[in-house]
Length: 88
Image (cartoon, rainbow, N blue to C red; front, side):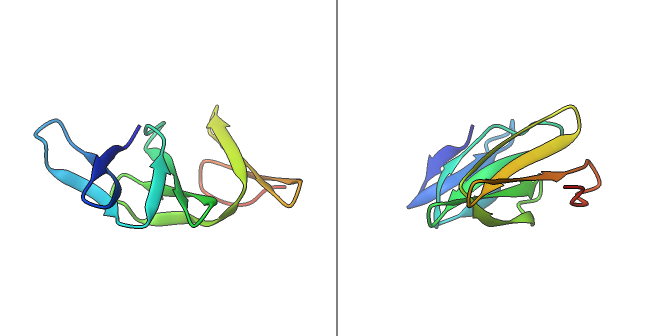
């Protein structure tokens, strides 16, 4: 998962260089297929390996695997494919 850095959570590479950081992330998962879930203001979003937010912070939970992201918002499932297109 992410590491605690300064006042938030972020990611470092094998050389110890910070590659993604947001002082408002309170939790972060390990990268999976180039993407990671990050928690900001109580909502989950997804970043790529550069730290760019690719799925907005508006979900209460989620998971990923097999090239799909499954996220929950207000009790409703939202599914994104590996091109980050919402399919459901």
